[in-house]
Amino acid sequence: MKIRTLFDKINLIPSFLKYSIKREKLLMLSVIIILNMEEYNKILTEISRDLNLIDSKLKEWNLNYFLTQKNRYISDLKFFKQYYKCGEILEVGSLPYHFTAILKQLGYPIIGLNLNPNRAKEFINKYKLNIIECDVENEKIPFGDNIFGFIIFNEIFEHLRIDPIFTLKELYRVLNRDGVMMLTTPNLYSLVKIIAFLSGRGFNDPYEEFNKLHSLGHVGHIREYSTREVKKFLENTGFKIIDVKYRKYEIDRKFIFKSLEKEIGPAKARLTRLPLTILDLGLDLFYKINPKWRPMQMIICKKEV
Image 1: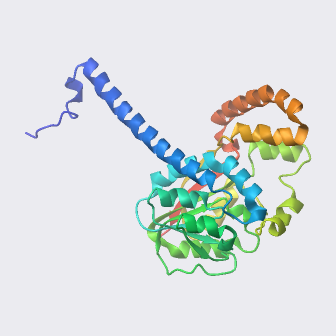
Image 2 (image 1 turned 90 degrees about the vertical axis):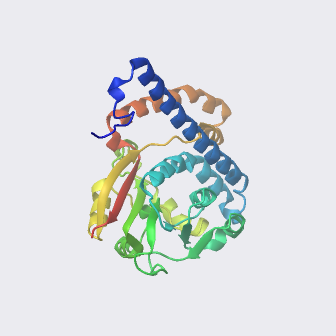
Image 3 (image 1 turned 180 degrees about the horizontal axis):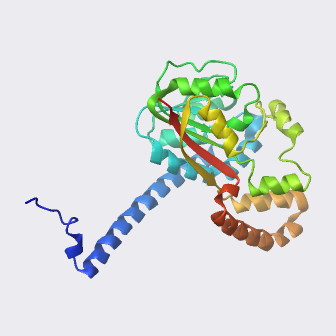
């Protein structure tokens, strides 16, 4: 007869001990999460002090991007840890290198690709980041086939303006057979986008998005996509969809109210605090019931072999 472990005999443990074991496990898990968050927040604080290590015309954009995206980085990190197994990591379109630096500080072997790394040369040097210059819409990725165990393709797809198919085929080529790619992009059919469209404002301001090529050195959001459209691109370039997630991450409220103060003045901005808080809570409840209407989408995929 096989010798069974304590956990095989869990039904024989008195209920008060079961509760104690469960509580101990939850406590240990909580401690791990807290320690991870402490480490993560420490890295974020360090990065926040170095946001000025970038081309002077990008400083305001870099600060705003950090404040609006830092909670996305937490979400991205969570899913990255879930799907990453081993091997080198390729991040496409790394500027402003916040997530690159986070993963490097956490000890992951990450390489970044960017159109013009010189725009944040000081930041790259300080964090000892491995960033390679590459225009992924016009140039082959400078690596051999089946090299990377994980590809991060976050908030880039909507910026592609020439040939997304070429770019995806290149990513497929350099991803190894057991590798995974994480793609995040705005959700075209989110509640916010639909309301904007119905109110006559459109999905974004095309002039401003193209003008970013002059003001920032890279073009803005040229085209945003539905999940079905993104999946069609991926499946027709050789990828197999593993999972689809819809997300809404919190933007720093201090940043929101400071922005409002600049636009409408401090007095009027103060009057918006309570209505905006109530609206945000209402949206959270709506998104919980209807997750596909959340503003962001994440698609996890791998090679179809």
